[in-house]
Length: 319
Image (cartoon, rainbow, N blue to C red):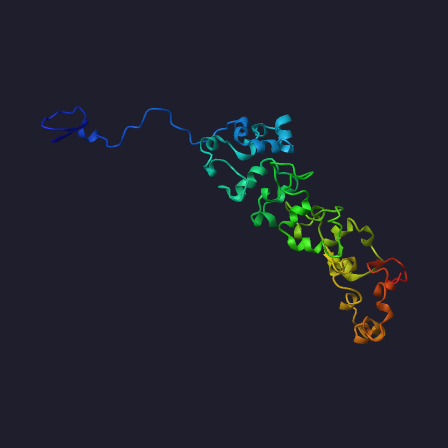
């Protein structure tokens, strides 16, 4: 038996015209075009063949109106593939989750890649500082707050009917505070979480839309801004020294009831002994001789200009 280039031949010695060193054991590739590794665009109509319900919901969104009626660039003319990427791989194998970008927690693409698809168009205004924001650092995705495939909210393509309801899905503590007896009028629809906080990023603590808590409060409570001839130092320093920002079980969003809130600072004796005297057991509301200064607005019955006074004689904030 002798080996020949074409195979094994018994009893016959054949002379090969091909040198032995040129013999290759690798199979010859089949003839035909080599498939491309890069996915290609297939067009929106191809998507609609399978995703009928999703397409019907998407048709009512601002994205659909822009992409269909007034696309600003070549990317927006792609329709579905403007956000999900080229879909040729997805059409060839719908079971392959890596063949197309999906915007879910079960996606084959990480949250940062999903967000980058949105930021191709939404890269202005507050999104300029999305990178490094507390929400971005905690791996929050655009699709965690927004639903671009259906118009559920009046504006913003939110996942719920309002921005506040969307925020409450991750902030249950704040939801509870807004249900306390004294609260900001958020549940009544007069304000929204986004009036005070910027969810996409801020240069300030707590994603505030102002340089400080006081500057933010002054936007609605301009009468507390001053300047005052006689200032109340705690109020000037931070509104949160006395008030809770979302809700409280005490009147006027106070952190505790009066006079006990005032006596956290004003507990001196001597000429102003009446301040500390209110804390004695006999002078409490259930005591044997209730103090008349506990009635109505307590300390503010006399010190009415508690945030500050411009009266020449208002050093004690009486007037």
